Image (cartoon, rainbow, N blue to C red):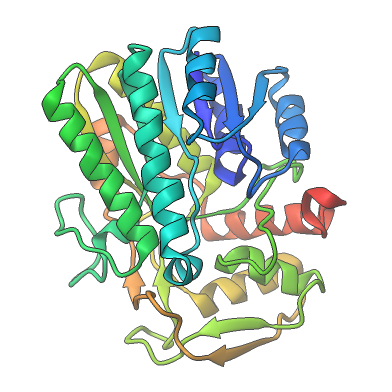
Length: 336
């Protein structure tokens, strides 16, 4: 059985479906700080399995001990964490407490329960402002914001844990920019308040929930002046987790893998693609750059294919169509 921390969130809910499809049993732990109970119900319906859901926080050691005692957990897929770059710049202590301290409590509980296999949800932000693209796994590591710093700290902790006890099996998965939604349109990204990520913001403007897209910076050294990112369909992303866990079940290693498509799209590229998917004009205005942002960031996905046999399959059009299907079916997110 797999424990999915943060398993009611955007990526975690899609992961639950893919792990169940691959033959695993899951139990989900989530404090619902950035997710909803309704997401769990819909995920259970889509998966065809009423897996157990526990509302709780990874910083609650007593709760974790109880969960590990109650379930025969063999591995952990660790999604739980705060994830907004801009917010982390404004609230660094909250990010370090939730992400780093929460992970420490989780790892200690795993050791106490004799569970030594973990797939960790890291981020391409650990590369900081890369000198060149595409980004390979052996690039120098640095960060430009507390969110990225928290992810790099957790990676370093896990590397040290593996040195101390090589029986650990660890996958550090560095995400690029997850987007899209389940093909059914029943689950997708439902951020609290104003979205911090581009695609849900564009989708909310397209649906009329917001007036116009704020494009943070139009003077970057990119083909149209707006930031370039590697957008990856959430279903592709979570399939990467399944592949990583299957690899760890065969090999007692620590692996570090980029999960990206290898293609970079600018903000305006994605806006134009969403206009086609939604068949409407989406208003936008260019404003000042956002603290902690960089010009361009996209992956070299070759190692992921060679190491764990994974590569992205969905293209930009599919990402936008699935994002729009979710948004148009659920204009108020899970609160509809």
